[in-house]
Image 1: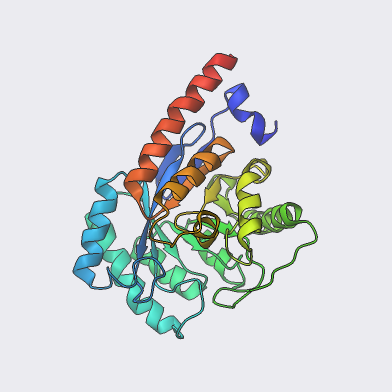
Image 2: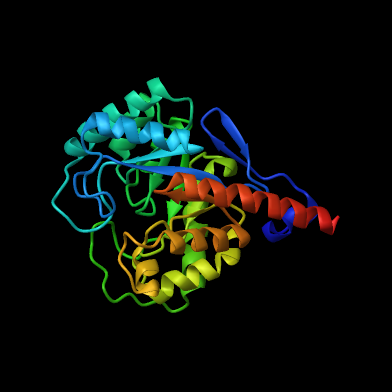
Length: 293
């Protein structure tokens, strides 16, 4: 049965994050973004102080985050962050969050060594924007019983890619994600623990990111939960001809479009707004399916 037909036929779609299982057949989960970086493009280090970081985490949980995503290195170019630096940033953060909250925890890293230590500290998911370029990443995730995110990227994290080209944008991204998901399964990670992400703005210009959002249905058809990372992304403020601090409406619109086309995880800065969209769309999808039966 094709993934696009699952709602129509009422097949339950599950996502496993640690010990928790989520029914995402008609409901999108909200992943709250927590930066442990002094140079984040969004908050510019506003939550770098550890108490401020923990306060931000509490706010995201109170606003309805289903799980939290901690990152210690920004995706774009910047000053070097060694593995030791990254560990110092994120391992205490994961440990503190695990002591305070029952929600699943994600670590946004492409380094297997960081993943290993964060899983030991209580993380449940490895969110890797590199497409598993570290050959030890998937074995570490499998050994730790973790879920993973396979993200499309054209080059590597932190490497500028100002003029990307593709033979077939949607086909190339779909093929890449299919290959990386197959690698994860071959490493021993069950399908219910594998998420895919088109990687908007990662080696894509404005029009490419918009096209991939518009074709989310093709990526949802791959058969894995589809993550949408559109929150405050460059392609949105370029489309709206505004700055990154004035695109709340653009992010909300992207989330609505994405859910309608099959996205089931929203990686979001504004969790409260994303939660409202996810809940509203869950009601709409449920009504649509009821009308079809």
